[in-house]
Amino acid sequence: MPEPSFDKIAVVGLGYVGLPLSLQFARSGVTVLGLDVDERKVNSINAGESYLKHFASEEIREQYDSGRLEATTDFARAKEVEAIIICVPTPLDEHREPDLSFVLDTARSLGNHLSEGTLVSLESTTYPGTTQDELREVLESVSGLRAGVDFHLAYSPEREDPGRTDASVKTIPKVVGGFTERCCTLAEKLYLRAIDQVYLVSSCTVAEATKLLENIFRSV
Figure 1 (spheres, helix red, strand yellow):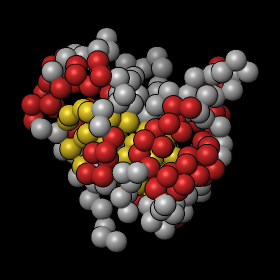
Figure 2 (tube, rainbow, N blue to C red):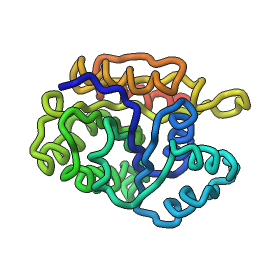
Figure 3 (cartoon, rainbow, N blue to C red):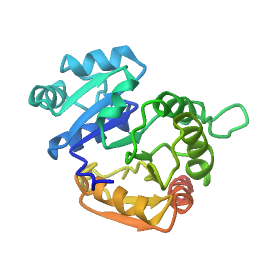
């Protein structure tokens, strides 16, 4: 497979995690295709209008007008990109456990349109094992491709730095774990297109655990 440049990527889920990440990649010169089932968000981005109070419409309009950011509900367009970053919600269910339905539904929607060599990175908060077990199983089942062989798989948790006004998506270090060593190396290359510092860990499971540890520490 040719070495990916990650000049064009997709971000699935255009909420408080996916939108700022999309804007940061676009500002860094990457062409970003936003994917969401919510037509209101898609239409707002394509009209250059903000639907999140922390982001001015001018920020979205600038990237849309530049041609580096657009949004769609058509998941078939995922075949156009070299990397897909999943930023969908994982709310707690009635048993106080993460509801993975949004993640797995996204995997089913992407599966039929997953091209060989594509990198899929999950950012949604979840428990260790989600990426290499649940997400991988659905992607492989629907696409007929094998993770670590035909496509690449990684986990890199969304991170915040509450209380700081000088922190941004660009400056908050990213933690990355891959399904294989090659997956990890490619995920590092992807995120370095837009993020200042990327720290590699030994697996997707370890990366998932770092997110839980950080959340628990903050809660305490």
